[in-house]
Amino acid sequence: MASSSIHESADWETGNDLIIVSDAASATARETVQPPAASLLGHELKTLARESSHYLAGLIGNLALGFVSFPIFTRVLSVSEYGIMDLGQRLLLMLTIASKLGFQNASLRFYNRQEFAKSVTSERSYYSTLFFGMLANSVTVGLLFLLAAGLLPTASILGSLANLVYLILGLSLLRAMGSVLWGFMRIEERTKTFNILQVTTKATTLAIVFALLAWIGPYARAYFVGALGVEAVLVVALTLWLISRRVLIPRCFNISFFRAAFAFGAPLVLYEFAFAVLGSADRFLVRHYVGANALGLYSVAYGLAANVNEFLIAPLTLALVPIYLRIWTSDGPQKTSAFLTLAFDLFILTAAGVLAAVATAGHSALVLLASSKYSRADSLIPVILCGLLIWTANIFVGAGLFIHKQTVKMAGFLVFAAIANILLNCLLLPRMGIMGGAIATLLSYLVFIVSVAWASGRLLPLHVDLQSCAKYAVAALIAWMVGSQLRIDTAALSFMAKSAVVLTVYVSVLYALSNRVRSAINWAFTWIRARC
Image 1 (cartoon, helix red, strand yellow):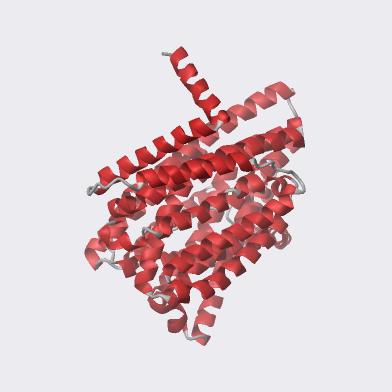
Image 2 (cartoon, rainbow, N blue to C red):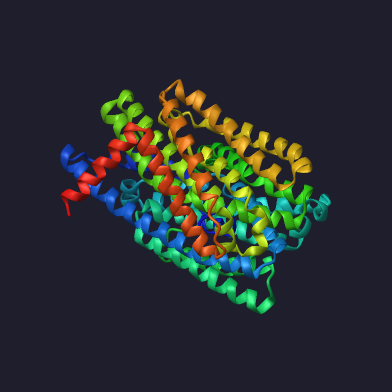
């Protein structure tokens, strides 16, 4: 499962890169001779459908691998070692963002197929500048971190991570180089190869890590050693592929292009880093205030909640943004607002039902997937999931800022929410333990979404039906109360039975309360009967 736990490490790209792809593609399209509109539209739609299916297949493959590996890691590793591994991933994420410095976005923005076809010099300058520029920046960040570690009491700051620093630094360099190499493959539209390599890399990493766990013991070090080895092979292989194409030549490094790429990508680092702090600072503070064992419990609860949220946010991210951008371009702001309002209402309806099911069956899911040694973390899952669902709402309520290209404001709101997250954790963790961390996460995401909704709503208003939201809340509460009455000892049966009961009761109550839901269900049954 692609989650905030160990499996997040396989995701070398960020959502910001997807935003830039459309800019690069549109820039390339404007430079070409335009065919008739209908022909162009049909061709682009076919291309979009084909390449989206490739990315979707890769996403499903990675989710499947995560679903298999998560129970293995939680059972093999001790609670504290799992927490150390998750904490290491958070440090790795921040170092990787600093090492990339937005160059992976520049690889997408400055690609010019027509110019490169005409000029070999321009092509070599593009690949060489971005590759060697990324390498230089990654090495510089690594050296600065080592210098800071030498001047500061590293052991007291990093704790048990101090012994993993060199592995994490090596991985951050490889991840940074990997991000620009993946960017080259994406902009060249090698989508099949991209996704096959992504899934193969993750599968190979997991296989080697499992072997290392059996060989050197159940320690977090095994994960970082295995990941470092596999990703080093991958980066070397992709680099040799570029060398064989004669596009990586040190003397073709262009300082002017390097400055342009830096000027373009660097501002996006603030957004990425603020997001990383918002989603990661709690791990460091949990370890500091509550201890390593509590960190392990918190990390597993966060990972399970993130996995549930991922199943909602991944399809939405793939499908929603292109659709509302198309509606905005073709039909204007009113229809875009109407579409997003309806989509947001459906999201709230779905999220309320999912939250009720998780609140009821969370303990069973935790025991089933992670083992009973993490059972004390069950109360954290619905709180964290609620926060993550609130975060996911930014896809809808932040559409106005995105459409009007005011992403700097979103970065500012992220920074504010990240600061709020740190302060809330410092306030609540000493008083409430790990539940304080979960509540701090929820409140900080709420701070972010309220800020974004306020700013974005002035550009593209969404009309939230409070009466419908109240009905969803009542239905979810009733479903949770009914499902909580079930008592089944077997974890698997308990999870399936409670989830089924909650969702059945939830839909039934909404059928009685909501005309909209009633009409939708009646229409669905009519449609099914007509085709049977």
